[in-house]
Image (cartoon, rainbow, N blue to C red; front, top):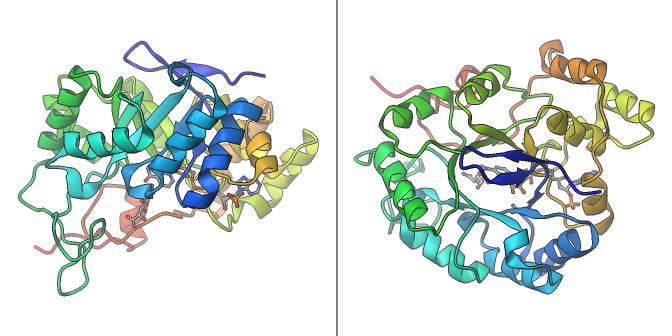
Length: 313
Ligand SMILES: NC(=O)C1=CN([C@@H]2O[C@H](COP(=O)(O)OP(=O)(O)OC[C@H]3O[C@@H](n4cnc5c(N)ncnc54)[C@H](OP(=O)(O)O)[C@@H]3O)[C@@H](O)[C@H]2O)C=CC1
Ligand SMILES: O=C[C@H](O)[C@@H](O)[C@@H](O)[C@H](O)C(=O)O
């Protein structure tokens, strides 16, 4: 059965389920992508420059035999490239073996200095990430708009943007972000941010929809109970929760049986959705992906959890 799509603010459609590729090893991801497209029916692949496997992802797409134009490909501009968006995209396009992506995201709303002690995660002598403090986020977005106008990215969006960060670019944007890709699952439902995105016509995309590596969600008893009710597995419930809300879900797997299963979301009813909506309130709130950026990103829970320090006065 084909996966339903939703419309982006460009007028183009994005399939509600896409295959994630973060931490998929180069030696495994070609087969995972080929299998996902050819055997399991995926038409949407989520990747990024920073994942270091885009050449192998491109190879998997080619091996599937499905025409490029039928597949929705996302990539992301890494933080060390905020001053050189098009250069990052050109490397991605060459690695993927295509001349456009369907969606290009700003991976994180934080620019890092280039040319330091690490190509992806340059640090200062004290070990903190080497933030490019002179650079303004809106100038990154202006460069995103340029590659959109050139046709190299059919849609542009953001990732890991709180409302605070979106409000930094929206008043000056001439092309509105089409999506915001953020961590979303029943332990981190981000209801307020989702409502804001929907009010702005920005499609939410859920990363780590299953709870990422060694997920606590796959062992949750409420999720298990709903899975039992539908005669399926926890993963299908977690993905079904997003699909029920028109949120794009990006489950990652390099395991054939799981890849096939993840594109069969459980058909949740209102009661199931309500239970999952309230799950984090029962003391289960958990943010699973919180890299040490050392700057305020504007997510309430992240700040409170003290994972991220407020800036020094
Ligand atoms: N924009 C951003 O900053 C971020 C984007 N992402 C995107 O979102 C994608 C998904 O997020 P990710 O953090 O990878 O985590 P997921 O929530 O997709 O979980 C992936 C993990 O779950 C396992 N798994 C997959 N399917 C099942 C299943 N049906 N039952 C049990 N276990 C399963 C996988 O194992 P195995 O592969 O061995 O089968 C893997 O260990 C990423 O791959 C990436 O594309 C993720 C994080 C941040
Ligand atoms: O997309 C995946 C994630 O954003 C990942 O790229 C980051 O969390 C990175 O490991 C970091 O430490 O900043």
